[in-house]
Amino acid sequence: MKLLENKAAIITGATRGIGRAIAIEFAKQGANVAFTYSSSVEAAVTLEKELQELGVQAKGYQSNAADFDLAQELAADVLNEFGTIDVLINNAGVTKDNLLMRISEDDFDKVIEINLKSVFNLTKAVIRPMMKQRKGSIINMSSVVGLKGNAGQSNYAASKAGIIGFSKSVALELGSRNIRSNVIAPGFIETEMTAKLDEKVVEGWRSEIPLKRGGTPEDIANACVFLASDMSAYITGQTLSVDGGMS
Image (cartoon, rainbow, N blue to C red; front, side, top):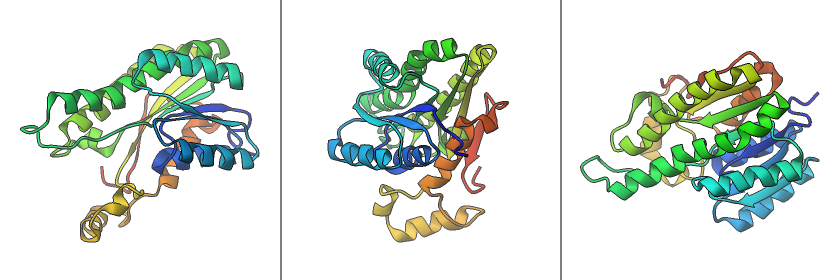
């Protein structure tokens, strides 16, 4: 029995790293997958094929979740194409790291807009269909940095901490309609982005983690499967740290 059989999920920012792993794991568990990407058309076409080969309905949408109107359009298109929206995973995010002394107003605004406002935009876009269905699971991607802060990432930390407060409020508002809202806070996850870092730096990070390894995108995907599935039917308003014990 597949855990997400016949559920339709929207996953933002899914052409690489964590988002891609979530999309593949969801398809393996029987979910139909609508995913968004910003510019990587080729990677989106490849992913679409890969998901369809797993026997599910899959479609990529070039869409900017940080744009309110485009987020509404996306939800309408997905509903039209897939019939339901059972799961929303707000995964798209960026970093523009710098010490506070050096962060420009634009670098602050961009990170808040792409990481936090996009969560508002898409959550608002899916709640009507979810309320009609009287069920839904919203999963928002925060970060260990949203819980602990990090020097040089005040903009990113603010956006990721904001996601936690937003998600808890949504859980309180929509619980009576059987719509759940939870957060996943990944720790140090090894992706193609971290592969570019100096090996010594990465080793230093690994040694600080109680489980003595970086996480994999699949570690995050598995937690998403749990929160999207009926196994977590009585869990809402929670933040699940998937960080090897960092926090």
